[in-house]
Image (cartoon, rainbow, N blue to C red; front, top):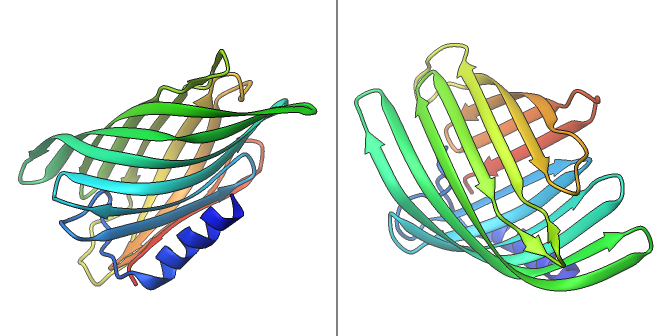
Length: 214
C-alpha cells in the first residue's frame, strides 16, 4: 500500500494536467486528485486514452465504528453519454474498478480481490451543479455499496481568470461501514487550473479535496 501511495504522489508532481469538473479530460491528459477526511480518504491519477475513456489507479481508505477498508485498484472509466446545451452539460459515467481490499473488523482482517462498478450521473451549468453516484462492492459476503448525492450553486458567474466560489451539500454512505449518512456542507473554489474544496460534516470533522494543473 505504501509503495502505491508513493507511485501516485510521483504522478501528481510529474505530470501536466488540465482539470475540469468532469472526472475525465481530453485525449492524452492526466488527471490527479486527492481527498482527505476523518473517515474517507483517497489518492487517484488517470490517463485519458480518448475523449471518452481513461485508465487509472486509486488508493483509498474507508472506516467506520467497527469496519475499516483499505483498497488499491486499477480502474477503467467510460463516458456513456454526454448532452451539451448552450448553458448546461449532462453526463453519465461508468467506472469499473478491480483490485484488492483489506477488510478489518475489530482484531480480524482479511484480504479480498474485488470487481466494483460505479454509475455516476451529473448535471451542471455555470451556476448549478448536481451529482448522483452508486458504487456496487460486495466482498467477503458483505455489502459495501456506496451512495453519493451532491448538489450546489455558485455565488456568481465569473470569467476564466477569476476565482469562482460554490457552496454545496455532499452526502455519502457506505453500507455496513457507515451507521448513518454523512452530510458535509462544502465550499468549492475554481480558478484556472486550481480546483479545491473545504468542508465540515455535521459531526464537525473537516474534509479537503484538491485537483491541480501542473
